Amino acid sequence: MATTLLSIQVIPKTPNGEDSIPYVDKAIEVIQRSGVKYEVHALETTLEGELPELLKIVEQMHEALTEAGAPSVISQIKIAHYPSPDGISMERLTAKYRP
Image 1: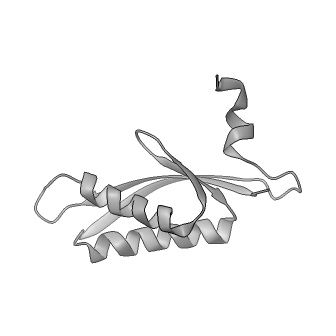
Image 2: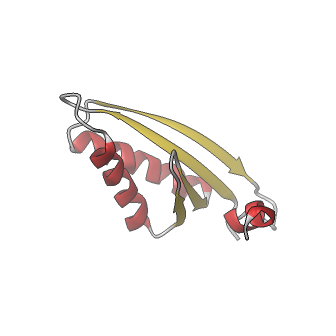
């Protein structure tokens, strides 16, 4: 069972004021390659795993965006950390709201 949920919204500054969505797509590609469980939502993406692993993914996302040409990146991050043996999962946390 995972101990951490991390939700992230990346806000890359684009070099010439162009659309930021292609940069956001690059950040999501980093998450996809990581192999962690994740869900993409309209305004943020939630990852499920262990805290050190998820923070490393955040670092890799920022590196990917700056390598793609973003002069700077701001991220809004929310972390729910449950180090108990029961841990936490997206499904368990939101089960009562799912059809």
